Amino acid sequence: MYLNNLCLLDFFQNIGIPIKDRYDEFQYRPAAFDELGHGIQHVRKFLDLCAQKDEKFAHISEEDIEKVSKCLAEKEQWHNKALMDTQKQSCYDPPSVLAQQIRSTKQALDTTCNPIMNKPKPKVEPPKEEKKEVKKEGENNGEKMETDSTKPGETPADSPKTEIKPEMDID
Image (cartoon, rainbow, N blue to C red; front, side, top):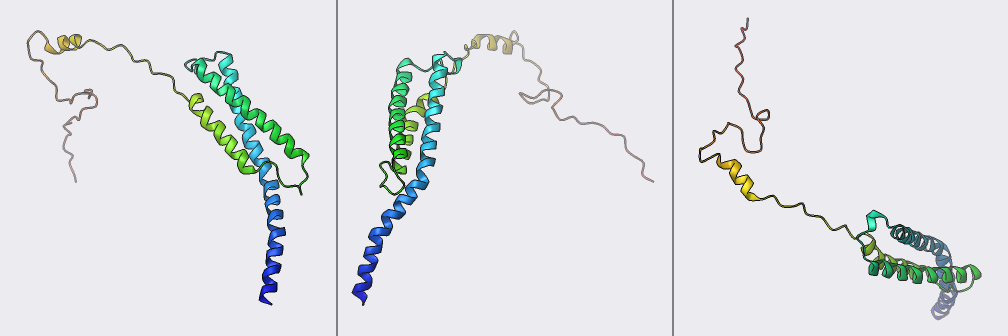
């Protein structure tokens, strides 16, 4: 009896697991294709802005733009081919492309393109002021300057004031 139940269990698992896997792939594949499609559109917008010589992306080199362009072309071609193959298939056929493969393709696109697309502009350092000018102002011809009771960096309006208040008569 026990051996018979094991044989039935194996039989149903051999049939049921592939059906469940096909169902899961049928459910998850469209969302994965959408994610990849949105990523491709995002990169394409970046390349369009670079082609228009947008000031935001003027600091990115031509080699980096070419690298992004090649990656986009490769992933877009794969996306279109996989989408066509998937649309031709019936829901009961084994999937030719898995949702995980689509997600890994999107991850590869992001890994290659996002560091280039998000590269910050190099900061332009303001010219340094000469320290000689600062010294001359502080020396005041060899005489000591009288200091107020204010702290450095504090304006006289910010400094604590001691106000003399008239005493109040309390009845």
